[in-house]
Image 1 (tube, rainbow, N blue to C red):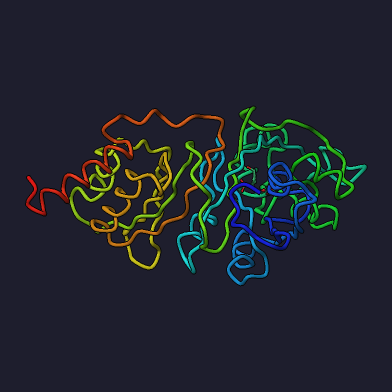
Image 2: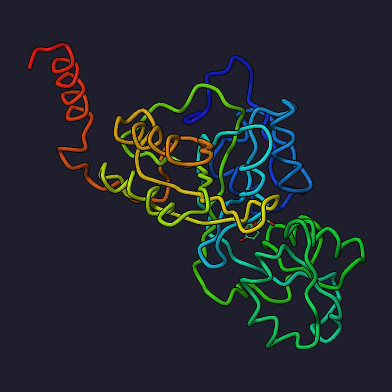
Length: 315
Ligand SMILES: O=C(O)C(=O)C[C@]1(C(=O)O)C=C[C@@H](O)C=C1
């Protein structure tokens, strides 16, 4: 499978479950069902823990949604604990259904649950169609559907496939406030051989900066001066230190590219902490920007040779 370290045995995958989540659909879209085994885990932390403990080889978790933004549990789960690396990204269009037990009408719905990201993406529809029903958070959309089937809630916001999987009826389809939403998932493994550069890769990292004037600018400058385009920047509080933040950065290129490697090495000098989160093929249907000649590997190699000559007195 592209993006996975070479392995002699089938890959054991975990995903944010239970069955019927968008995470399961994303895994199916990226990996043939014949390729290894797959088991649902009840939450993002449980999925990452299964990878860290070696119970599975790889875990698929949601990272960000085009409408609702980042998934905090995934960001925190990757920034803390034993290091994990992203070996693949997977994009999945998401559409939401209001699922109920057969026989339930809209007027019968008194309680409703879903994953917070799904609730946020359907807030206007829910407010208009179920006024007075306070949505409750669930660990996943399919988890909410299972809870409806078990009689814990009257309705769930979930994927159409989850409604079918748990024997529920769809009272309404396509209830998202913004049509065309896409969720980005990442496949993570324990640190090991990185996916080979493909020429169209992304690199992810977390940088912790000290609280001083210009600290973030110092981080950004290391990318800018090497002609590296960022595709995402997000901050999260460090949580154990008041008002100190970590910055999650995705940039174009692979750590094997000299400009990217040198930028990360520079961040290692100027930041309090840098956690490398992986270099992997870009899968959002976009092409990385063309690299300027003076930021290309050849230019870095030639400059390094020149420096060696000068240092050796061969000016
Ligand atoms: O609950 C699921 O089905 C998930 O895969 C999680 C998740 C998310 O965390 O964003 C994935 C896609 C949707 O945007 C809503 C929920």
